[in-house]
Image 1 (spheres, rainbow, N blue to C red):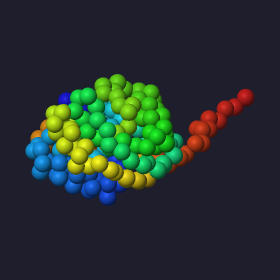
Image 2: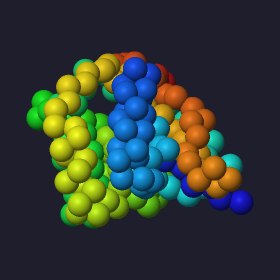
Image 3: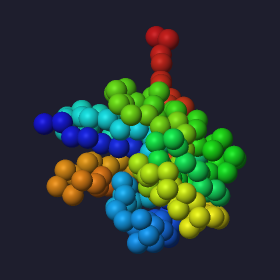
Image 4: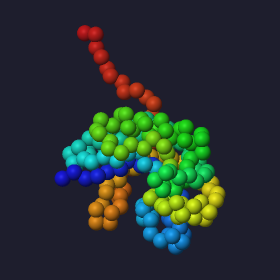
Length: 186
């Protein structure tokens, strides 16, 4: 039976805690909203796979992650999308570094990724009404968060709790060595 998975970048535990508190504060003002209970993350993509397919995907994630250099990510402003999403966005430098990493996972994973994100952002809430979106911007006028992005995270959707659960981390090792293939002339 196939399961739904997501590939994400997780901020530090400190930032995850801060985002959780922000979501709680917002929910006290406007009530429940989509993404309220989701752990802070930057989505790279989502896909559906069987257990056998997942083992191959894990190998691909490990290989891609091994060659990526860890990086500093600065999240410094709030934004929104027309669909009512309220999020924290990276500064221009961090965005410029994150986009190629996200696209690399999309291109190098040899499996169909159903939902691909190429605009790095950390969602606070989704599907807010215009009034609730305005309230969120008033409640949170400024933000400055920074963390070292050192891995990519694989999560499985748990239908019982309607949330994704972390199942594996794949470190960014900055290994730029090419695989050496020995050949012989004779």
